[in-house]
Amino acid sequence: MSNRISQIKSLVKNECFNLGFIDNWFYGVHLLGVEKFAKVLFKKMSKADKEIVLLGVWLHDLQRVRGIKGDHAKMGAIEAEKVMRQFNYPEKTIKHVKEIILAHSCDTCLMPETLEGKILASADAMAHYVNDFYLTIAVTGAVTGERDLVSFKKWALEKLDKDYNRKIFFDFAKKMIEKRHKALKEVFTMK
Ligand SMILES: [Fe+2]
Ligand SMILES: [Fe+2]
Image (cartoon, rainbow, N blue to C red):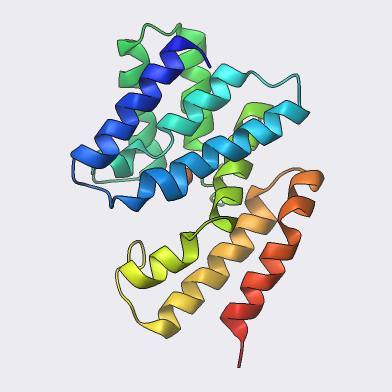
């Protein structure tokens, strides 16, 4: 990992635990999961620019980490630019990383177009299938804003389908997650 990436990772970790906008689980349960899968994916795709992907990993959710109001991806891209300027990244890198952050949610009109963007969106989704992501949200009411079981299950099923069908771009990545996707769907639809 480049020195700048390690410093940015520490900066984001520090903000996660100290700014007080995000629950303590977010760094370990989400961001480290995204990093883990991004590395799995770019090991298999040698053409991918690892620095771009890792900048995306550490900066894509800054809107949440910094508690900024407004559009998640747009505000995140603005904050990411500030950090990259602080670390003297070239314009070309800043532009590309902002693009992959803007598209990382894969919402209706904005899908990632570059390999690095597809890796970030896929890793972001894959991270939801390991560790305690769904259970953490269920017990804390984070994201959904409540602990009502019916609305949690509705939210979880929608998220599972969006993650699996829209955000994981590579067939081998889908295969890695397929069993867990089916298992979680079964848990949340059990009668
Ligand atoms: Fe996000
Ligand atoms: Fe994320």
